Length: 212
Image (cartoon, rainbow, N blue to C red):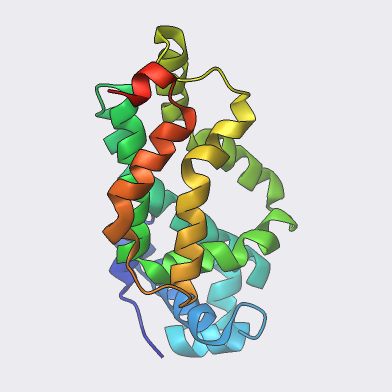
């Protein structure tokens, strides 16, 4: 079984007091990646983390709570990479490029977290933490929405229904990453970052902007 250092979660659970919590999260990730979410037991996570069942339940409540905590920690880790880059953009075109390049970089560098996000999404979306996920999804494209609105205003971006932008922009990249994470394609996501960034821009850009 591949193991992960607790520092894997330092950016989302910082500080020395969170070290044991990070150890449990990293052990849970290793178990879920090795055995699958359904087959992994709390006892397996306890053994891998060299922890106690009581400590796991103290931090996370139950297995579902641990799955949700790990899921949101992975989301936060991804957004900690993407969000500052979008905010640093100077144009809508650049912001979309940052979104795609950062997302593909994160998946390439942290495939276990990315694979867990993909595998656990249904469980979290249909569990007791579904409202938290809905709120996170609304926040995910918050910074990008400003650039989309500006692009629509200046005519560089097509005025499409708001709910379609996410699928048009990130959908193709997510589909490719899922295939890569399951071994169906061999090329790393970052190998095609320019291709997917260009496709994302062309999917929503006006005809005049596409010529730029």
